Length: 346
Image 1 (tube, rainbow, N blue to C red):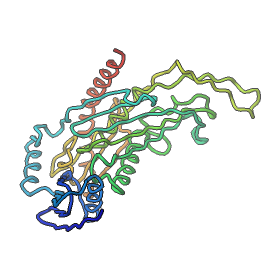
Image 2: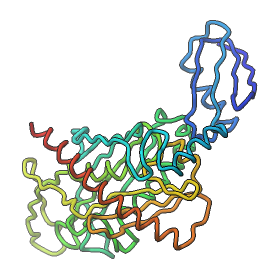
Image 3: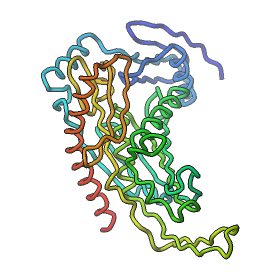
Image 4: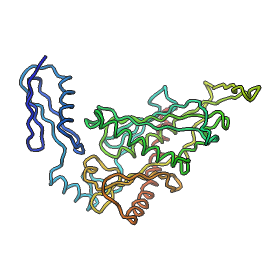
């Protein structure tokens, strides 16, 4: 069926006029949308519509008014954000574990309106010849197209790659493995021959800012929920023959998460830093630093976002603040994870 459509840009809005069924949609305030992206969303909406009559589809464009910007920035300056939180306070956190029965471990974490799922799958593999005494971990993130319009098409792919790389840095340290928050040595079965390969997958279900911290919390919870099968290895009769491996279906050992860090992102708005920024607050940031910090206060990884440069003294101050925030966050996550695991056993 054919329909005719006109598109008008008026006061930060794109108005679609066509023959069809009434529909309206509002983008998250942090989204920078182009005309091409608007057409992509329009096509998606049309695929869900039965055309009946003359309608208006109004898509609110991103961009806060000057009054909204002043309200957000002024609240942060006075340590009273728009949702009532102080600058370094997180939104309510909820954690649910064992949400994917087929995985070795999984968790769903919700912080405010940001919700993600992380799962862990363990497979036997061969260690890297350069690191024969360590197992392997891979982290991948996917942004569901239904989580936000900006996740559709290349926007979602680019953000998924950016988040995957940042999580790799946060949990696995450098290329040599130095500073890794996950103990790769615990994944060795037979040194130089057999190891466990952990595939960690993150899925963004809904997004309202601070994705990296929430994904980090979900990975920590999923690893805490992970059970790795016990392996019995029968020595080969000759060096050329592979060893026989018997994987138990009943005996498992819990993955050690004592060294797994939490990720704390401090977003700089004006002259102040805030933790757990919402999408609207992120739209006003000049830069942000994400620190992964373990329970001993050691930094496992560091990532910077935003176009504005930062003075070294400011970076050091942000790291110091992030360490302080991480102590409270670590305690809360450990408590929530323990409560979620207790619910499973009941």
